[in-house]
Image 1 (cartoon, rainbow, N blue to C red):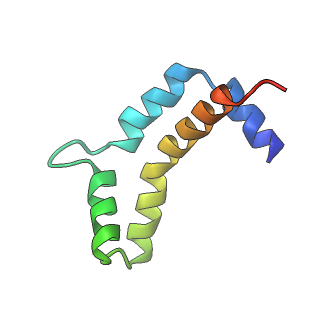
Image 2 (tube, helix red, strand yellow):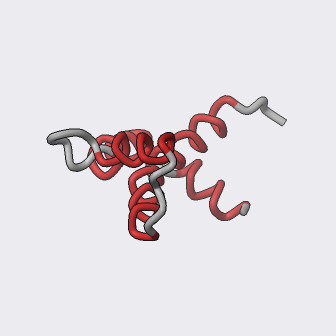
Length: 77
C-alpha cells in the first residue's frame, strides 16, 4: 500500500486532472459514461460484469485524484 501512496504522491497534478477529464468522463456525448454507470448503480440495474468493470475503469482516475488530495491535506508528521 505504501508503494501505491508513494506513486500517487509523486504523480503530477496535471496528469491526475487530465486523466479525470479524459478517461474518467469519456465518451462525452450524449453523457459521460461514469454518470450513466452511477445512475445505473443508484437504480439497481448495474448487474452485468461488463458494466461493473466499466464503472471501475471510469471511476479509477477520480479515486486516484481523491487519494492525491487526501495525501496533500494530511497533517505533517
